[in-house]
Image (cartoon, rainbow, N blue to C red; front, side, top):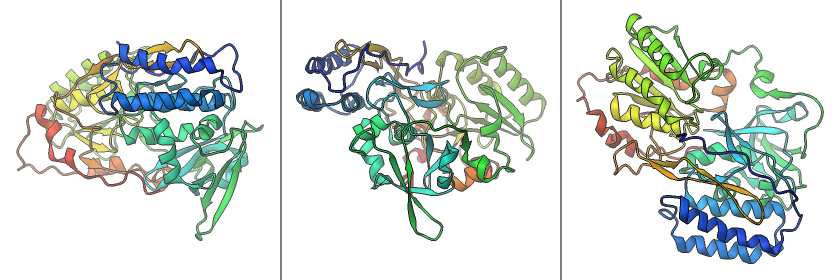
Length: 452
């Protein structure tokens, strides 16, 4: 079973009217019926009465909605499940790593703004864009179409299917690329409008930069390459492959990059795990670091050999020697891995809160709505890799380390720095791993995840 085979391409209607036909209102009830029959517990956060109120509101508005508005309203209804695996079918996780909003038919859902942005701990910045938008590079985006970025996030959040705010921050930048979603969320009057980004200059002044719909001719540019071409990217961004490991130059430390829970061509995760454990045992490794940043999952059944390898690697499976790095992109089958590591080893977690809970819903089924042909994905199973009482919305890092824009630009990895600087208190009592979900750090108040 694929706990993270979640998000797939939407089936596209044969024709897409500008104005939604009245008969498409039937899809709202079809969606509720599918939720009732497939999802194990869709109303645990938002009661059925709330779903009914929103469904009735959408039904009443159908004759006045344009296509992009109808899609956005369906996204808002689906998001009440508060489950990142239950969402519209055209929002998917490419290679279980990159969030992608696939083009769909209809107004401005088949085009994009030519810019990629990312939410860092210190705000919203462009990380990749068409060269014609170079004026944005290195500057903080403080408003979108005249709306402060914090408020813009709040406006878009109800349309994002997510278990927690970390995953909403993960998906938010990708919805900003879609004119249809920007307009559907009320950030623009229509999908034909440009994206007007207000950026802060170093002297405190602000300037507005216009990004038109569509891809102009020319090349795209990575902002870090454009501004700092001589800076080497950190290991977590440059070590290639679905999984790989290397020695860190700082000492007897082995660093593992685990990008995707899928076998690679020429090597399975099981074979990789055996090779890793042999190397750890033979090289007198003192610290093992497993980096899950951006790992959106895959097939959770493939995790077991790596988990078993970590359990028997006694030289590092002890407090202060085994570390797991997570971020908001750690999701689905990667969360199954997090749960098993947390429950069976003495690992410490570093980085950002995860994009999902350890106990979460997955294995989504594709449903085609009968009138519009729009597809949704609905979770069918509840994966419980932690204690049944574990209601955490995410795993809180024991070593919380936010990523700021300047870190990303300069090639610095503050998470690795924190891991290497950590010194374990040998006098501290050793906690049984199966009680790790209750350790004090999991109740810590992290404060705001972003300083917009």
